[in-house]
Image (cartoon, rainbow, N blue to C red):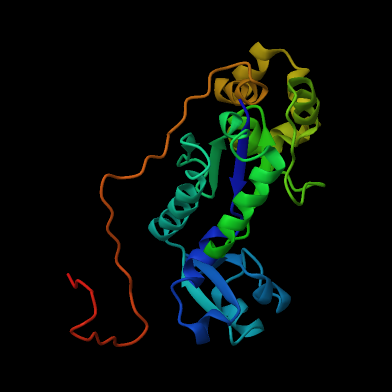
Length: 262
């Protein structure tokens, strides 16, 4: 198998911007949750706005800042559009709730149809551009590894691309522990013990690591290395499609327009 992981680091901001009128879309933009900034775009960051900042502080730094609320349903719709683009390259496209800004596609059987991996990646990037998302890509023999590597920023601005199993294992051993979802509740303790990479974790006795951090941590590592099954939540096109579009201004239709209003 060969998996491509797609990571959309600014998905929430980009999904919000897509709903704005043109004059608003050019303003610095940030997302709020409980009166606190959780994400800011590059224009807002240039004005000093940072995640964790209070709403009043952000507006004092950037009076022109446009604030919006995080909306999981809006984000899910935007991710679904990315997944539908991916379905043009393979029927094996997966998403899950644990990684709301990621899409994974298994492309081993598709490589011959698209002229190899590099040409497939090039076409995929081109097809995703009209959606207006910043997209990171990583390639790996397992879905879990693709998800881990696509979120690793050190030296992989375009994503990490690895196809051989031995090369994958070496790369994973150097990956930060913080990439593991199951490790996040235990990060302070793990860092306090000097355990910073997946290789550091693998050097420990598995039974002791499972008692301290839970079996889920070991399972995540095993799936990434290809040592455990990887169940997937596959994406399928619905049998029928419907969508609502909110217009910025009043729209009038002529009798000759072939438009059905619900």
